[in-house]
Length: 135
Image (cartoon, rainbow, N blue to C red; front, side, top):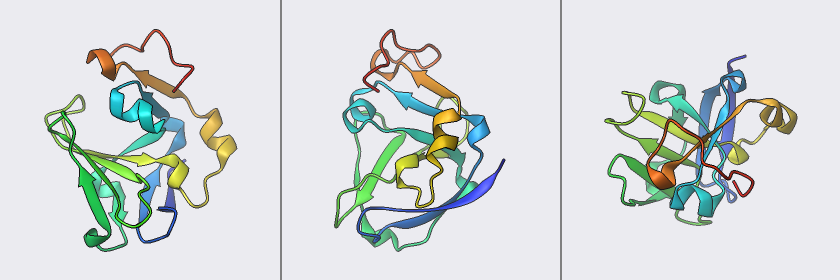
């Protein structure tokens, strides 16, 4: 069921809302960035996401992937979401929301949602990695 969630970083400087349907599943990736963060996320279209705080609350890390932007809170350092531009696997820009930053996360709902694992480490996005226990 599609629901609007409010979310934030630890210090509340970065706040957002996102329309999420956990029935569509969550995902985890083994790329060097996601695995170091243990980034458990849900993807939403950009029009389903709204930053409620000022952009100046964020600073951004840009890794090797030119379409993935990794903003995080300037004050507490929490990585709340990613912005992904095209071209990418979906053909449209989207936001990866860190589900652990949802203020009213129903953990049972998240744990019962399907999880898709992506093998970003080998750039094999259509197949899961052989090992996922650490993600």
